[in-house]
Image (tube, rainbow, N blue to C red):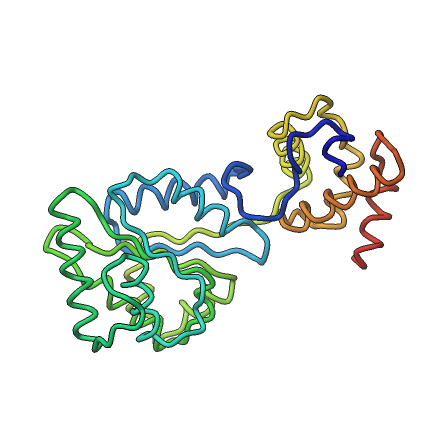
Length: 269
């Protein structure tokens, strides 16, 4: 593999959402700090949106890594289910009930409320993270909002993070969801990287794998990467991984814009 050829301890552009590799652009840093602060301070509902591949899931996993053990988290990634099924998944994620338990909605909500009250009594909190929330219907989004009604006069007991593609923002502007929109404490949007940030992003990931020569991707080469990826982190990872693979196959230690263009062509970009 090319890792030995280039002297890496691991592949620098693995597309999985590994918190170790998170590059903090101003937008990513703002969202990360906002999520952690919002959950810790029990502020209720937040939303994080961004185009496909902009790093939403990586930000979420990083937030989970930094939250204290007193935070109990239900992380839902399958949002094409109806609310009753989502509620059962929440209870299962929190180890309150099993997926096959036959509970009415009222019973399930009461279990969630009791559990949240217990967490509050010991200084903890409960967080619900709903990934790909744009796939929820308006009716189910409204049901999720009702979970924010689990509260005391002074504290929100269930913190809710809605993440999704820009379509989620469009749904939140619907008049039928105005109550949900009014409950959202903060809304974050992750933008793509500009050329300078793309350069920093690539060097950041190379440094993390103990790259001995941080100039594998020089300025002109990273500019070519940006032209083909438009600053989308997931696409940067895929393209750079293929560039390194092609360089290894050709025994090249200098990466130039032509090699980036060839890799992009191979990907039909």
